[in-house]
Image (cartoon, rainbow over all chains, first blue to last red; front, side, top):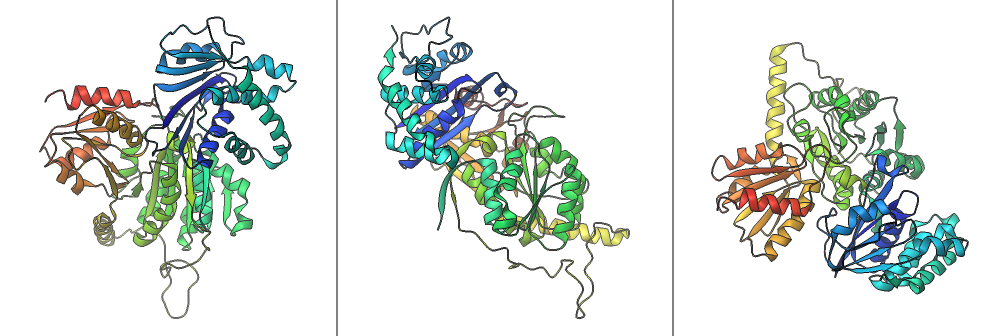
Length: 181
Length: 356
């Protein structure tokens, strides 16, 4: 199994940390992982993206142009990455702020209303975990318990009391993900 | 007990330096390598091992601190990125001339000038052909993974002390910024288990004073010194390191190092799945360069493609090794842009297989 994922959105949405937790979870279950962020001026207020690879084999190139899965959190990223999903691959997006929805019919397209749900739950900071939950519902490449271990490893100890809220957000994301018409 | 962590390449270098028992780090921040200094500051290695970590007022100050501290026989290092390394070159030439061991990390970004903060391999000539003035060479290591970022710290010091020569880790923003699994060895003590008879540690009655200098006004002495240096650079060949993938039955060969080698691995995998007999040679040391291994392979394969994130630098060394026996092509992406495995596959079809 090799899963090549791009996660893209605005800086501050938790794109990089979502990728990091996914990579951690992969590592916890003895898989090979890589996490390659976009770094530079585009991170400051602009778009941010990260390529995460989780594989049973040694990861070769950490930089890719086509992906098994694209997790898209804003319009710019959708415009940029819709075409990079491999035929048969998965595109998961949050419809919040999307004016031109995905158009491809040779890939699986799902949506998760994560921004709205996070606001409803009064837990805006767990937005990215709702998205992660939605993704894991569709592609359970890592076990939930390893995601929690990943959260523990990547969050500083003073934030560990937030782990239950994050776990709840992941579960909520799993429930509310729907196929885009 | 070894320990496995998920880390950025830059952080791995910093942690490995503490664990390798390094005595001192002197640096100045610059993207994309600032995490080395940040991590070292955050970890407070002065409490873990007594290691000194100092942010100097400039790159030039940092390299001269390395020069001075290396003269006392300590394990010391610095790190920077391309424009910062250019500033350090005067000091690096002095250190090479004075035959002092130290480690210099260059996490390369796109140039020339201030350029861009994105990854590049365009400092190959600077690293392997001197860079500073005079006939000198650095030992140059080219990590292709976060694991090698960690491992090459200890290896770098081992080679630097073996030859009393500065060693450079030539990485780039891609390997520096990416996270991978990395396994660390146990903490090593800051020991003096290497020959320090040359160091300025205080004169004792039983020997002459040690003098550390790169100045030799007598041309006869400077000539002799240069011959000695050249003999040393030749001896370094015994420490050449490289890795090969799928070369046993390869008809065509890619040569790539560092981040570009990772991208090429994927290209080789895809090409193989299409039935193209492609192999990859990845130099782990760029000086000494694996010229013999490439020469040997050039007798078996039909063509070579050198792939680098530059307008074409390492390809010259590949051509020298092949010595005109078979065609050597180049595919490169300069200026901080990264080629994808698909771009490499296209170049393989057009440049390497095109004529056959």
